Length: 403
Ligand code: HSE
Image 1 (spheres, rainbow, N blue to C red):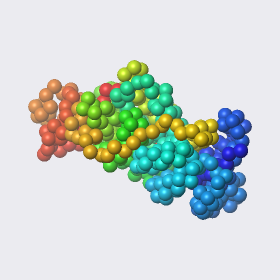
Image 2 (cartoon, rainbow, N blue to C red):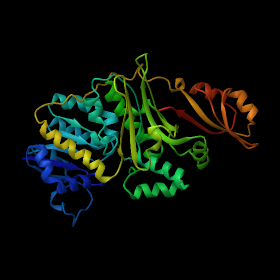
Image 3 (cartoon, rainbow, N blue to C red):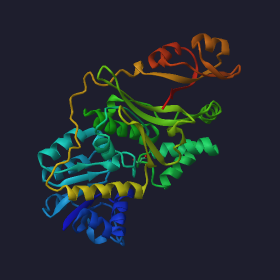
Image 4 (tube, helix red, strand yellow):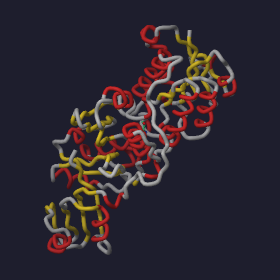
């Protein structure tokens, strides 16, 4: 019999308890032994909850109980989650987390600590919600040199952009709906400003290339600047607007990593990923492109990934998995984002078609009026585009990606 503790009883934590109860028999069969949730750490009053008897308020009760061998951290945020997870690993307990902020910020350190203590630190649910991506990237694609990863990594923003494109819905009302559905972060700024997607691409980049990338090393732009005009002009030109996290290994050994809205051609597999769904394209030298698709947020999809990790942690008791990367410092690894080369979708206010084409020769003009000219440029360096736009009223400046 293995005893488990859950830290955090919000959307994901209650989903974990629900999946455990609902699928108990098959979970036990897969784990190879009986499993029991012994404690649930939660400060809120849970009177009347079916798991009321398991609720504890004091973390020390969990960390000091030698019977607890696997701890699930689904509290979110960096503190106290980091301190609790570290203490559990130090006590020789395996930890399963859905906390992207924690893994993106401290993954290398916690993986090293887990290894030293001969336990596991698993985080499948931290990227892509219910989509299996961490393990496939690490194990199934292991024979490949991964060259590039690009994905729709945030369910909330994809839900908003989809509703804007398909239903002409407003930003605020759609965000409220995403919050009600349990997709958004407690502070939804992390979703709409791109930080959540940034944490996820950092985790994928660290895993794929073996070296930790910190969120503050990444150029991040969210979706608050995207207007309905952008979405409809892009659609008219044959593109969807998506928030994309991407990383590419360069010949120099550095990585180009970014999160930003992007125009994606309608024919691309990423363009048809809508609503709360996430899609992650992994480009390998042997496989070519592999795309992972599924529900990227929400209670039960995320809980399903957490519970699968618990099963694996139980099965792997006493052995350390090879899921690992290291912190090799920040210097000389992340390429200057100004050197990023893509095409661009520009809307320039009060600029004639002639002037726009003189600035960006070879562009495709999408619309032109005395008020604004919209165009798609050829592939250019981001820094060069910003130089050319100095002093020009720029209504939109969105990269165009060809995944
Ligand atoms: N807020 C996140 C999203 C939850 O919308 O994708 C899943 O990580």
